[in-house]
Amino acid sequence: MRLFCLFLSLLCLLALTACGTEDETIPPVFSNIQINGADVSSIPYTDSSVTITGNIDDFSATIVANSAATGERSVGVDSSNGSWSFEFAPLVAGLNSVSFTASDKRGNFNQLVLNLIYDPE
Image (cartoon, rainbow, N blue to C red):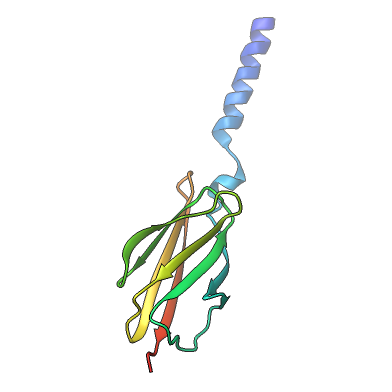
């Protein structure tokens, strides 16, 4: 009887592990996105570089930035609070696009795309 109970307990544990949790399908979420310390704006930026900051809800997520100006670069995430920062430079006159892809250990991902207008005049 004990062996049967042990077997049943192990079977239940394996079933729960295989089912996983709902959190396994939720991708990392970007929040508090700012450029040079202010909310993102459609007004043209006049500096040739900007600092983009934000938070990610999964503190262990990996973030990769990609743009024509910078190529693909890894963005450091502060594992104590989920904050991150990225210097986007040099901007070219006109439209500049940068995308951020956050991925978690379970393979879920989310993308943030920012389109910035740079007017040096």
